[in-house]
Image (cartoon, rainbow, N blue to C red):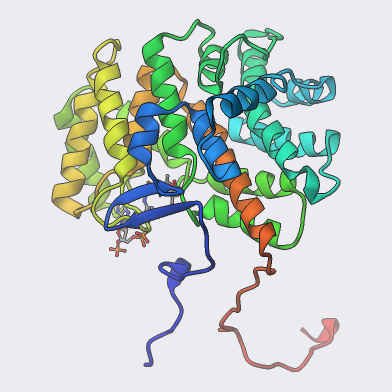
Length: 373
Ligand SMILES: CC(=O)SCCNC(=O)CCNC(=O)[C@H](O)C(C)(C)COP(=O)(O)OP(=O)(O)OC[C@H]1O[C@@H](n2cnc3c(N)ncnc32)[C@H](O)[C@@H]1OP(=O)(O)O
Ligand SMILES: O=C([O-])CC(=O)C(=O)O
């Protein structure tokens, strides 16, 4: 039989150009507009990365101050959006809350023309943490909180909203790093979704609403929550090894391992792993760190698979006091910067994205009237 020319899942197919990031060039690195992600995660606040992605260059001090001020000015949510959030059931998944909140925001501040795209992108960047925090505190604690917190950056704001505490410097630095690491990743599934929607010349809120839906799945952003659900079942490394070995024997996937592009290592994971190790030291269930290491080692030995960004991010978020269902929403809080930058890039040189399919169904049939079937 002739070999099919189709690349399953479009793996390795070059579907367009981008100036935003390089994933896996040279084997295993990640750069945003030429900057190594490790440098950004160590030295910059998330807003610097978001600015770099949206506007092309790292901001000067005054540009960053003005950008942060604009974002802080949009932290308070409009009343109709708060009303919608209050009506979402408390057992909804927070990704569904963000999806609904994003869509609702698009009805309140519709993007009337592409000239408004930067304003819409900044509104979304500022609003996602507030929506998540408002709904979370309303449904869990019956509180109607003021989302316009005094924190200088989104990292501090979102930590305060999700933990209900003044964030420590260590947790704040970790959150800056995690948002930076999650900000952008070329043509991943959610970004590609955003670009497909952008390609129809739809509005920015529709693009981001679709992207949130794509990120939610456990083969993409949802893997960080799935990884935590696995890790937290064990107290001892040996227990974890036995259970994961049994999963592999049943041919189950272990979330947080493998990658569609990286072949040897996900550079973000090294940074997340260091943070997980550091934060475990002060956590009541710090034993989950050696449990994670044991799973990582087993996956390397048995499957030659490495942990991706979602694996050690899971335990690091957990040690920072974040509840598991908030992990993928935090990914969205970060990735909205990359999505919006890609939407702008797609619009700047747009062509409707419409690939072809190889039809494999029945060739031709004669119509049979309903009473003769
Ligand atoms: C930030 C992010 O979104 S990173 C990705 C997060 N997603 C996950 O962690 C989900 C788990 N991982 C996976 O499903 C995959 O590794 C993907 C989707 C990320 C990458 O896909 P690909 O590299 O194309 O691998 P694909 O899914 O085709 O699997 C290839 C083989 O490796 C196996 N494999 C891949 N990942 C895993 C895994 N995590 N656990 C067990 N086996 C795996 C597959 O079962 C398959 O085996 P087979 O050839 O015997 O059938
Ligand atoms: O690139 C991918 O396929 C998935 C990923 O790691 C990301 O979106 O961060």
